[in-house]
Each structure stands twice: as C-alpha cells, then as structure tokens.
Amino acid sequence: MAEAKPRVLVVDDDPDLLDLVQRSLSAYGFEVQTHTSALGVSNIVRASEPDFVLIDVNFPALKGDKVVGLARQYAPPGTRFILYSASDEAKLRSLAIASGADGYISKSVQGADLAQKLNAMRLKPRPASPNRNPSPVES
Image (cartoon, rainbow, N blue to C red):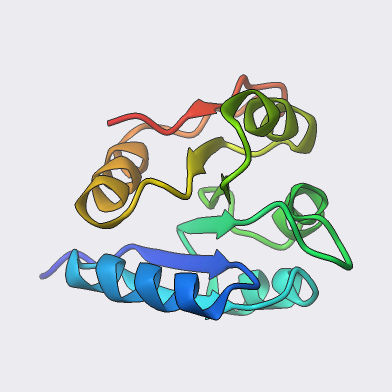
C-alpha cells in the first residue's frame, strides 16, 4: 500500500506565492491546499486535517501567529504549525515561541529545500509539551 501524501495547508495573502508554493510542493509529492486569509483557517484545519500548516504572520485582520493558537484547537494532534514569513529570524523565533508554533521557515526557502525541510520535520516526533522551543525547520 502506498504511503499517503503529506497534506499541507499554506495560508498567505499573496496569490503568486501561494501558486509558487503549491506547484513546487506538489512536484515533490505533497498534497497542497491554499487559503488567502487568516480568517477561516480553523474551519479548514478541522475539515482537511493537514499534516502541516504553513502560515504567514502578516495579515491585516488577524495576525498569523494568533491563528496558530486558535486553529490548533481543531487540528489533529500531529499537525505541525509553522510560521512562514519574510520577517527576520529573530522576530520569527520570538513569534513562534509566543504562539506555540512548531517552528518557522523563511519565505526565501522554496522548492526542493522547502520539501526537504517539511519531510525532515514529518519524521521527527512532535514534542508533547506546549512549552516546546520552536526552531528553524532544519533538515
């Protein structure tokens, strides 16, 4: 029996970035769903049960780091929430810690590198503690 494709929900208000990430991750065996707003993410997470949620932090109405805590309530236990932003690493790390995200990735990471980082993270067990120390997603 073939292993199921890892499911990724990418949340960003830039449709060009969403298209790029969807095409590149799909080429590396991921099932990708996109959403252009921080609003409604909890419902999508509940319905689609993604393995990963890559979420930008800069939305006008509701910041992505705040969405992590809200959406996690509706996510399966294994879902990894990753802040995906062009913000500098110190800010991303701070936001990841404050929001309870599992990690963070710079938007400069694309294509094969992004797929490799997600695959590596998928193989690591998710810490049970809500006080985990998020780090850049490393391969």
